[in-house]
Amino acid sequence: MRLFAALVPPDDVLDELAQAIAPHVGQVPGLRWPARDTWHITLGFFGEVPERVLPDLETRIERAVRRHPAPNLTFDRFGAFSSPRRARVLWAGVTGDPMTRLADSVRAAARRAGATQTDEKRFHPHLTLARAKTETDLRPLVESLSGFSGSPWQADRVRLVRSHMGAQVRYESLAEWALAPAGQG
Ligand code: 2AM
Image 1 (spheres, rainbow, N blue to C red):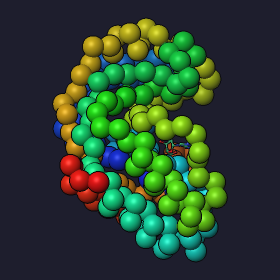
Image 2 (cartoon, rainbow, N blue to C red):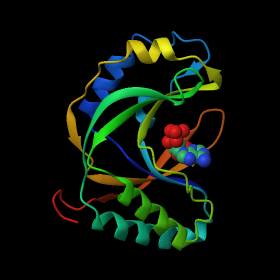
Image 3 (cartoon, protein in one colour):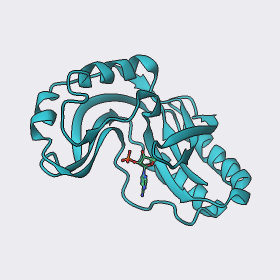
Image 4 (tube, rainbow, N blue to C red):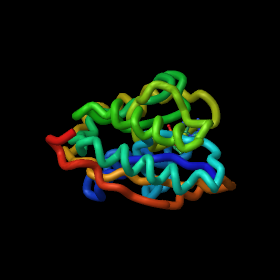
């Protein structure tokens, strides 16, 4: 099964992002906009994980999550990977409490449980809003979204998600664990 761990922002924060992008959705040729109920910030992508590994993976990730304080975050910009000029992904970015240790810890937990395909790339927290099949010049779009600043929020839980591949990717939430109260850790 294909698994990843993610933070899911609260509804009112997602409302602000949805409002900001609304004038552009469907307006840029080649861009596909995933449904809002799939929006998340990936902490760790584990790739294909054997089903037998799941119980141990859940135990280890839960332990990792409980050790880290809930980060306070704000969506404050839009950007694109690999760059606005040659974009495949349009994202919303956060600033706030650093999350690298949390992400490292969650990925290490998955690897120890036997998730051998766990992504080792540097962690760039982002929420993907649109994808393009080919590199697309999104400079005008990113420019027109500049100046955005959302409300602060606290990411208080981590969700383990199964990704069902197909014509339309479907996400299934398998478990959710609370982070430690902010100020601890
Ligand atoms: P993305 O939003 O930048 O595409 C489920 O696919 C989630 O895992 C997505 O949020 C995706 O990030 C992230 N992810 C990280 N590495 C991935 C990889 N190698 N393949 C697919 N998804 C990956």
